[in-house]
Amino acid sequence: MAELGKKYCVYCLAEVSPLRFRCTECQDIELCPECFSAGAEIGHHRRYHGYQLVDGGRFTLWGPEAEGGWTSREEQLLLDAIEQFGFGNWEDMAAHVGASRTPQEVMEHYVSMYIHGNLGKACIPDTIPNRVTDHTCPSGGPLSPSLTTPLPPLDISVAEQQQLGYMPLRDDYEIEYDQDAETLISGLSVNYDDDDVEIELKRAHVDMYVRKLRERQRRKNIARDYNLVPAFLGKDKKDRERAAKRKVTKEERELRLKLRPLYQFMSCKEFDDLFENMHKEKVLRAKIRELQRYRRNGITKMEESAEYEAARHKREKRKENRGAAGAKRGREDAKDGEFAAIEHLPGFELLSDREKALCSSLSLSPARYVTAKTIIIKDHLQKRQGIPSKSRLPSYLDKVLKKRILNFLTESGWISRDAS
Image 1: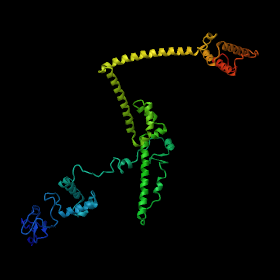
Image 2: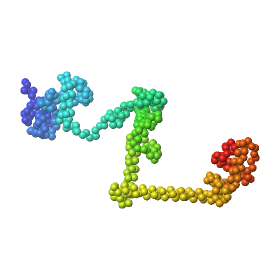
Image 3: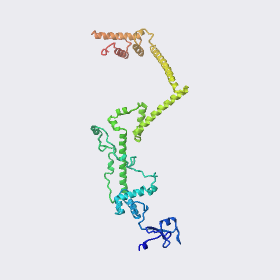
Image 4: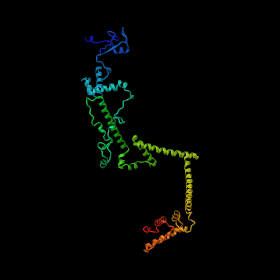
């Protein structure tokens, strides 16, 4: 009776009870997998005929040498379970395959045969094209820790926290950017009778709120990157002076102020690198101009440049000395020209340089100035001694000239300020 239940290949007469291919166009034509794959033909049967897979469920996909003796039916249940429960849920997968398989066996068989086995090597290449991006990686994705993980709290004192309204445990401020952003979603609720328009409107509100949160976090990151909080508190001045590697010129400070609106698009390090590279470019251009000047003067070796610079320095020093001497002579000539209108009048030699300049600016002759000066000082001395005196200034002195002369004598110390 056992022999009657067996099936044999009509071509090679091998037993095909576990798995056989049955022709759908010819009667009583069943082939083993080897003959079917070789395209065996017998009688009216042709290789292009339709076929039907007859599976007894007892053959193994990996051959008799595979560990565990997994049948094709168990393999099919395993693939159904991995699709239904997902990779890693081995307990539910083992229950789906059958009570004869433990979770450990299910895991080892799937990993060894479908991932590290020949099938996995053939289906999973070493470099996967168009690989799906892992948004949880720290590369700036929407779910990356760089956006979802809060920054460490600011290292400031309690008094400074109260001054800023800063809450270190939440890394938030009492007054945030766009303080009323939460009103977009505070009244939202999902109802079972919402139509499509209402659902899309609520989604739009949520999207607007998420955008505002991102903008709020972006501003916090910029403030943290550029140390704006220590700058506001006046704590970063010494740190910046200590960290500065070179002296910042006035032109660079002005350029930094002009480019300040671009800080939001670049990190602090990128901005510092930009100005550092600009400084290097300026130094290189100056060095190139210096080398070109050496070449124009016939210098081709660096050893000759030192001698050339020493000689050039001497020439410039001589020119500077000649220029200083010429300027001094020019000032003397200018001074002589300034007093040309009164230098030939009587009493000019009795005046000091300041008195000469005063007489020249007032168009007053030296003799008249000496007369007015004598009368004013005499009256001042008599008043100090308590002798009553009546001022008898010349008639050519009007109020303006008298005031100018009195102020000059007071500043020069000839008379006291009370007397003037």
